[in-house]
Length: 422
Image (cartoon, rainbow, N blue to C red):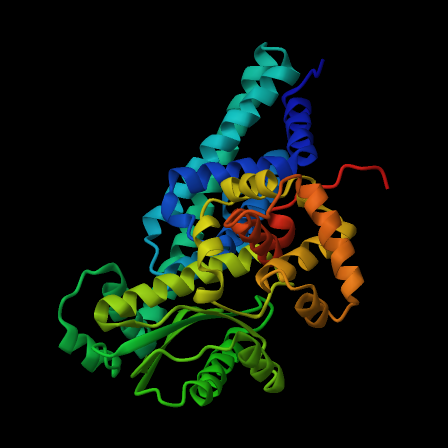
């Protein structure tokens, strides 16, 4: 049994470190649940978890040393998260609320550890008082610093023309303005036409100045694809993400593969999510919502997913992906053992997906996959055996096809881990 406050606090810190990843996951989930505005997409979740991890490491150090209050410094990734929230027009109150929720979660776990290691006597009480006091000091100082970073970035962001235009777009998207003429004048974009929205983002390691140039080059490149555009609008969402709208007279043909080749030819380090064609102010909003759904889908697919995805190609999966746990269950129910994540199943799933999408033509699937027809027949038979249901009756392959499309787009995010011994 520990004999001093320092020993109990040290054991508490060691236990936090041992279970760090699990604790950060649980704490981040708690903050997103209690502050839903922070749970917008996968990228924001990753930024929150990064900041939470760094804050946890710093507060554990602060618990165990004699550093003064003025020595507390907010971790850089926590400051980055605050600036991104400012750029995205997320209220500062949401950020501070998340810190208070995180503080409560940390103290609840930390005090339980202290009781476990201290045995409930005076040493335990002393350790708990120490943990509460030092944690409160740390959180107060960090909240001041991330709050200042937020306000500074907010002033900078809104103070330029791009920030003001972003505010107009935000009002259009959330339906808080009906002054279409004023919005058109401010944005210099025709809102009464047909629209196609494009969401785009760069890798986090690219510096903000380069991201701005990349987005401008992307707009120029896509203008060659949508050459009949009667206006374009480029609005930064934050320093690594932007929205584009193209005002078009009619439904365009969107060839994702061709656009991906264009990005490669021009060496543009971006990913692109494209909405469907819609008209008027309501269409301006709807195509952006569709592009956002596609973007969330692309983020779930990870860094190796397709660089260009359009809404008509993936609409059903994009809708289901709003609840990834339910989608994972759907895939498991529809594909059975074929939903297990291993290399053999990967080839079987892809072959069956192409076969079913090509009207069950072995020849067409063989051509598409560049393999022998007999190989296609063998793989299809093996895949159907693993699914365990017949897809021969009319319409019986609808759900399996949807599940196969989900695995094609999202990979491990919706597959079951392979527990078989290697």
